[in-house]
Length: 335
Image (tube, rainbow, N blue to C red; front, side, top):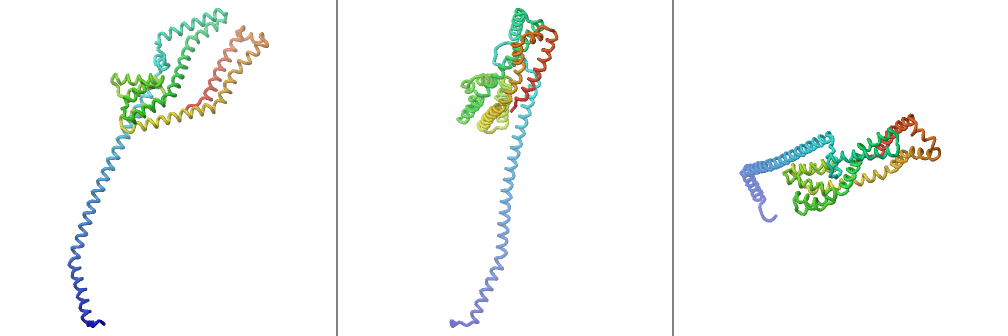
């Protein structure tokens, strides 16, 4: 068509195809060997990368297992110490310290005896029956002072729980600002309100005599046996053993303690009706007794003048105390 012989075109085409086939045949083996070499190099690199990743993952797992074991050991140690302290009956000296009193046990017993003798003298002067003269001073000597100590302990613990989350917030802010934990605790011991101030001052004093920060915080439960204090000691012990972000842990603990306080207030509000009913039921026998005495004095005097009346009052008092104990357990809730 263009003045070229078709035979020549065919020969040129066949020559080009033949030359391409010869080149492909010569270079194919070299290309394949190069591809195989590159594939082997890539596989070696991938295997090396996978080996590094596996080693890093294994190291992370081992580190996490070590930290987990350290945390478990710390928790077991704290639980063991807590169970041992719970099994031991608290001495009077420890209870006086928990109440925030500076009395020694000997002075406490002396005041109790003097108070019992005073009550006995008063009962003897007013001409009370012999059972009352002997029984009421005994209760005043051994029961009332210990009840007062228990009341003071409860009131002091409630004050501590009200201020403890604020102390944790102060420690958290101090840690985030760059202060070490020891200085943060000293700051709480100087700036917080009582009784948190006194308890953290004991922690500082324990550190000054050589105890570690975790042991010093663990001893706080001796003077303030509360779950919240145990939580704080556990957080400090875990941080000392395994490390971690202490400010975040204490911030979370502060938030949990505030939520527990809110829950206690909510439960208290919901149980007020039951507590009011228990108070009314407990006071009803005394109110009826007073009204009957005002309307018919001779009818009630038999209980005070006749020995059988004394026995009836004793049995009624025992049953009354038993009922008050049951109602108290029914309306009190632990959170």
